[in-house]
Amino acid sequence: MSPRPAIAMILVATLAAPLLVALSGPPAARLAAMLVLIGLAPGAALIGPGSALTPARGGLLAGLSLAISLLIAQGMVSFGGFSPRVATYALAAVCAPLLVVRLRRGTGLAS
Image 1 (cartoon, rainbow, N blue to C red):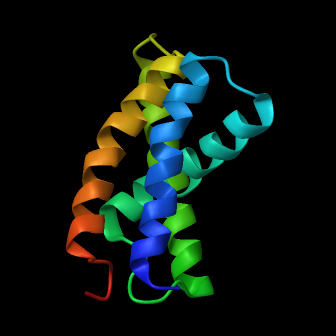
Image 2 (image 1 turned 180 degrees about the horizontal axis):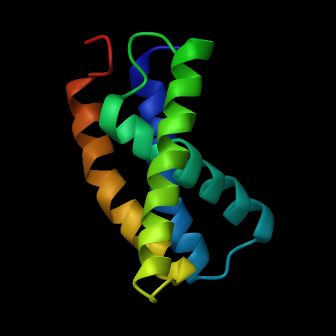
């Protein structure tokens, strides 16, 4: 898979997740969008999927994404202000512009 469709799919889910949460959308759609937002968007925003989405690169994206999401959640808990909605909005607000830049440039890890 080339990087552009992969980034585009992740960007769509990143933009859909906060909307579905805010509008109390269907639970299945919210779950799918949130899994992509938490599990892939931060890693794709930072390193991109590269020229081909291999199993190793997919594992790197997922691991990095989950680590970043965990650090954000832990920071919010440590400061006593954890809110799932705020975390969703903040993560999407940070990841979406970076994903748009990657999509426009067509860049990834290997580029």
